[in-house]
Image (cartoon, rainbow, N blue to C red; front, side, top):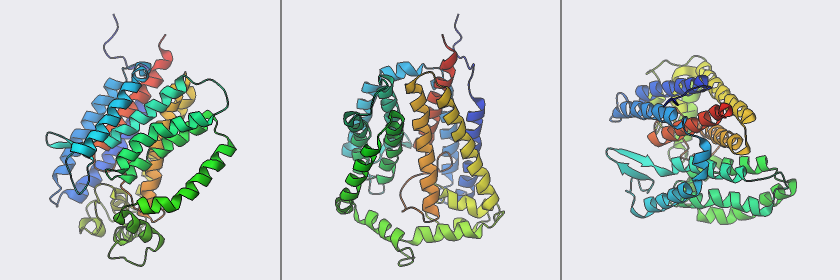
Length: 362
């Protein structure tokens, strides 16, 4: 009789890396919120982490091929839910991004990342070795573009941008040609002026602050100014947990969420940030190694697509904190406070485990 749970070839090291990064994030969330009205966020984040771990163990037992077989309906449900959030979702902080689940809120756009990864993986499952066509490129664009537009309308341009690396990874895995890259680049350059006029006023202010960071340090450039000060003041070893001045005195907006890297760097210093980068690096390496040993294209892309989103978010989030990228609402994976982001990552890890474990299923 088949066991209900079988963890043969389960990558406990990968799960351990994710839990270690999440534990570091929990400590920083506790440090930055314990003396504030947001003190309850630490406990909520623990609940999300426990739920995420349980989901990883459960989802790892699924055959990812069965999930891919139902992806058209899952994708349709995700798009309809994103549309429903826009129409009837609660308005919080001037945006329609969440659905209410009891005392918790769920950000559907975070979970949509996983749906898009699965949709592209399903497309790869049927693909044969041939030249990458414009039609296939358009299909990839639509798979991410439809939910991306809905998310941008919430408005949440930051999360919408996280769908781009999924498309990019899919295109490069399919063998996109140099000519196609050049044409896409030209289209992107020509679309920039129109894109500027489509941006909301606060989004334009963020871009202007990125280009001219010293012009309005008490206004649109305030956050990046404070995060740079925090990171620089951390020095080599940091000020110690709970001893940061910028984070503890409220100079850094959302220091427990999108700006948690700046708070962590202030309290743990350069050595601490190097340690966290090393953990992310090892986690990404294990994902890429799993993609290399996957038994089919779909499984391989599932891991590469997931890794591409994680890498993109880490790079952009850290880049925002040091002024290399404009400020957008992109969290630092596993560390930033946020249940929806945590669920996306641990559900993704569950599917990753499924791919790895299916290698030895006859």
